[in-house]
Image 1 (cartoon, one colour):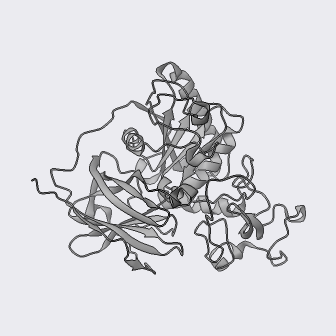
Image 2 (spheres, one colour):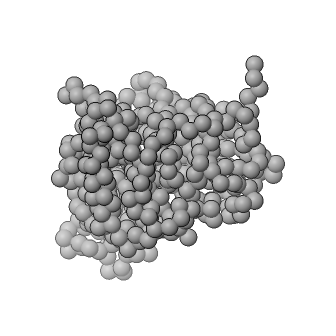
Image 3 (cartoon, helix red, strand yellow):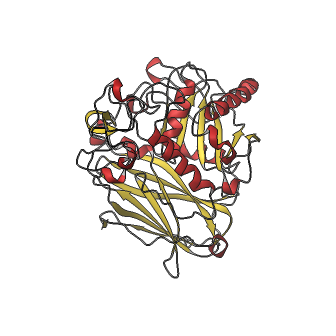
Length: 430
């Protein structure tokens, strides 16, 4: 039996209730070289259990992340990885994210069966052995260690071949990928015959992004690339209508049985396609005029190409995937059950339960604005504390009367959402 280079340790019950480290940025060149390692793994469990199983580790050509800001300052996402030096335990890199599995855990189905989802994380390519620690939050938002990998970057079992080769173009380019927000757009349900439509669609979606504040004021901090990954058939799956399309990413409506929720579980193919270019954020454009989409923080975003609300969907979903913004609506059907606890402060920057409002936008509220703030037009365009948000009409509050994260509206991010987006842009670019 070949000696495997990875030591895998499952730690399911270890509780690190206050995972706090003195984070210190390190010099990239001291510990990393150009390129990245992609860790592919399977994440499974039920509504109250989870486990991780390694799939494979793959060398990738590009590391698009900021080489100066290697330690994330944001306490966002369901999960976190820490990359540590094997010899001295110094934290070299951190990354926070959420996944489709974490959303599935909040559904009714997760109470009755187990499921496994494929996931990936990228880390800058280490020069020497590292330890990669995976953490998952409990219902109180405390991190618990669930998985550990010891990785030797020189081991012969790291996959070096390029899995999928596709042509690509720069749709918008403002500078080096090491200090910009790099968005890769991946087409879904576009055939070779749709190539002209695809190019035109992506140019239109680029403009959607830059029609919206604060993105339009920060165009010089973005790169947008398109990978020409075509499908055998146009469109996407709509299971209740018995519509099945042979597409490259195997996307479908009715994710978690919600008609408008359009996602893919084929993470392996998605990441192989994305690896053709440097990227920080993945955006999937689906060739359909049906209404729908979806997004998960630092995972991917999805938008339909030709619906009359596509511009709204595009920016709304990017708010989720890029800046960890919460949905501020509370009167639409969702697949989740009890997504937020009322006795715990949500992690998202644009909603609060008032448990720890000091950590949110309290400093932006004028002295004459009541807290909570009445849901009346008297306070339109004022920052306050409006009840209703996070899929709940009671107990969860949002910053303004209206926002792109609340209603179908274009170029309408509230002040708190704008500031959160700007902070994230600066993290990637400064």
